[in-house]
Every structure is written in C-alpha cells, then in structure tokens.
Image (cartoon, rainbow, N blue to C red; front, side):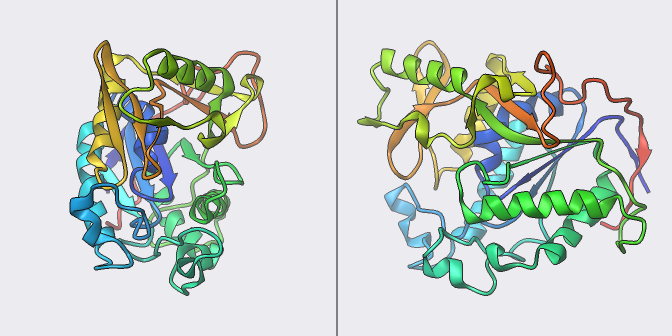
Length: 309
C-alpha cells in the first residue's frame, strides 16, 4: 500500500498520441504541480497511418509492427510531459485499434470497438480503485469526431466510473471509489477560430494545405465550456515535444516567434497547435465562468492506494 498525493487526475484516451494532442498542456501543468497524473490508453494504435516513409514498413498492411513501435513513442511523450504513471487498458495489446467504421479492421473480433463494454470497464475499475482519482477526463459520447475507439473509450470510461463506486462490483485493486468530477474534452470555437487565423497570418507554416475548423475534434460554442487550462510557453513547448515524440503520426512545425504553432497528421493538412485546452462537465453543468483548475472546489486529501500492481 502506498500513500497517494492529495490531487489525482486520470485521463482515458483511445490511442497513443491522442493524449498529447488533446491534453498535453493539462498533463504537463498538473505533473509539474505534483498531481498524480495517470494516463490509461485503450489500444496500441495499430491501424494508424504512418507519416514518415522510412517507417512505412510498420503499417498494419505490411509488417503490422506499428503497435509495439508506438509503445515506445508514447513512453517518450510521457517523459516530455513529466508523466510517470501510464497504463494500457487490460495490459498492452489487450484491445486492438478498431480502424474506422466500414474497414476490415473494424470487423476484427479483438478490436476495441467489438469489446464487451462491462468487461473492458472492469479493467478500468481496477485502475480507478488503485489510483483513486478525484477527476477523470475522457471524450464526449461521439468521441470528439466519431472514431469507433474514441466512442468506445467514452462508453468504457463512463461505465467504469459507475462501477468503481459500486460496492458490489468485484475488483482486484482496492475499495470502491467515487470519482468526484468527470470532464469531456472539447475545443472552444473562438479559440480554434483564432488559431486558424494565426496560422493563415503566418502563411500556413510548412504545410501546403490547411485543415478547417470542421477537422478539429470536439469543437463547441464557448458557452458550453466548463473549464479552461491555458498553457504558458513551457507547457506548450512540452506539449509540442510530446506530439513530436509520436513521430509516426504527427509532424510538428517550428515557429520563429516561440513554441511550435502548427502540426499535421497523415492527411498533411496544417492546423494550429492549441495553447489552451477546454473541457465540458459530463453532467452538463456549465458554471457562470469556466473554472481555471480541474480540481476547483474539490476537497482533496492524500489516500492509501489500492495496490495490486
């Protein structure tokens, strides 16, 4: 048994790289403040499209070695963010990347999309009861942009929060635990629009084509945002370095005026690297003003962890 820090944050993401793109500033901020930041990744991202030609042989339709490679990329990204506690749901490779709807990958029996939600949630219950987070971050019901694994991560995370608090649900790690607050990732429309305006003003960076606001997951009107984490230069630089660590998936562009300002995925479309990260409350509550701390208003104290690892 180990005494846990007073504040504990768990993030549930679908693939390696999702955490850095979506929550890199937030993870860097809280890790630096001594918060226990725990990342749970649901798949190895085996079906990802490989950007660098030199690594194309790793792809699922060739050597099918991308998943193990991305474990190393994720480990590197966590070092850049200062996060020491990272886990794969059910262990590395328990669930395979599901690809997109209508693809052969999405029909595989071992893909995450085909997993029984309660079974997958039970693995996450063990992590929740061990770490005992007050705050959990995951996706909205559409997974931000409709990817099967993101939708499934939402379902699994929300079910696990429910089961973790149930004294009748069995677990090999610790006592029942109620997560005080669940956030869903989002992006405030004004911030995304401003980011694209900056990108246009800079000439679009090194990318020949730009994405549009419709390509950014989870964009919502500003009045739906419940919490905001605004990054300073050091935190944005850490986020950019973590994204760059996912070299098979992301190209990050340098900016002459400060931290990197843009990036592209395998489609080659440039988009702004957002300095500010936004969150909605899962219960739909919208405060009069967005919180500037995910733990705002919570009474946090050290606890004894559930052990079992």
